[in-house]
Length: 281
Image (cartoon, rainbow, N blue to C red; front, side, top):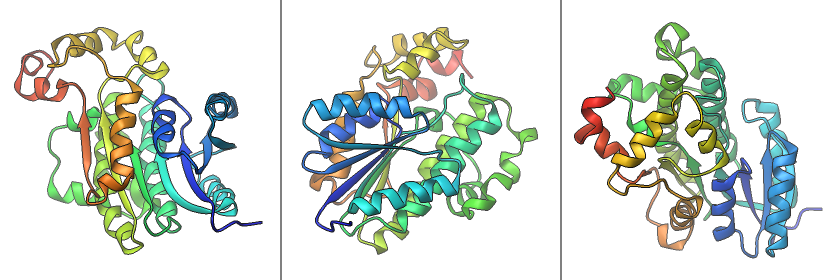
């Protein structure tokens, strides 16, 4: 039975960042945690429910339209979808270029399209992109527009994204994350017609299990150097991302939509204009 008075926040990706935002915006609402791995959702749900939140879990594969539609069906049966926190994805050390493009780029476009059809008036969402999107050299205006507006099912056919043009997993990740912020800007127009808002956050190195994988992976030395050379001189925490997520999804962020918030301790600044500029290009 559908209870229209129930406000639902859908969290896709039950990791540390999704949880941190959910803790700030999910009080008094029903949180639906969706992850590809059920054990991730169940672990996160236990922590949140023991802290007083109303939580349920489900499985989703963001790269499957059928799976995303099933998630939406589950959420709308619970109530009005007033919030979306999209924090699922794979990192360069975890996957091939084609998998990264399918999950991080196509999957995000799919989520934005499908949730943009059902988000409630006054609702809002955040997509977790990455500082990596800010590391990619400028694309042409035509390429920007293609990433922002190409119909979801045609997105992976763009010449820009063919494997011959994608150097490696990191390049695929940078393209995906740049694509996420462009896509959100375009989707903000459509979401706005429903009275809803959508933004991206582009975090730098945030200490999560995924980041620990990266720090111990093949690019670990580079990541540690980024942290040392950055203006802030440390990695970030999920709670700091949670604070920005709460601003963007709450009443204080009511004038913000279609925007991307880079929060990386100054790593991107150092990359383009500081000490990292001479060593890593």
